[in-house]
Length: 217
Image (tube, rainbow, N blue to C red):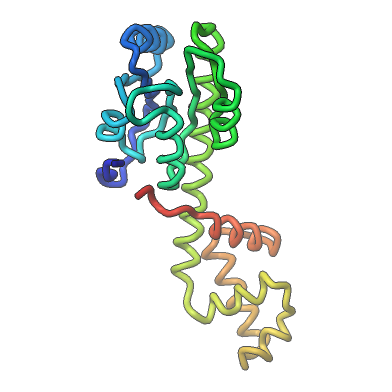
């Protein structure tokens, strides 16, 4: 079960989570990540990882596809079911094309067979960390916009919905039984509160706010 986030603070330094039942692989990847000055934590199985992991911690997973109990693919599907977005690199000791395709379709960044190329896995890890940082930044912006929209007055939201739908000020004024100047004033306040300067930016802000995802369960 996913541990509950502790507060709202996010640790600045991303972590590479290595999850593999093979101790030699864990030791090798831990050494490799540390050599690259990357923070790393290693786990022998998916269950111990889930007990320790915090969804608000940035990073990525380097995950063995085949493990006793909860497999790597099972863990990926579990995280997806709980709407947790975290980049995943799968490792496998044997070629299994169908499983690899399934993993990638479920959102894995890549699938690497053991023994793996050190330079490639480091490059993939860095790509994953950059992707995670980018996604977290986008989600933060979406949440901020959603919060700003929620802070609008009821009348401002009514005007905003009609503006975004492409209605003219005159039509909005008639529908809401207010003056055109009042509509214009509301539009100005809405754009100021949302930090946008044009209709196009307003529409984009509303769309982004709708993409806000709930906190991991």
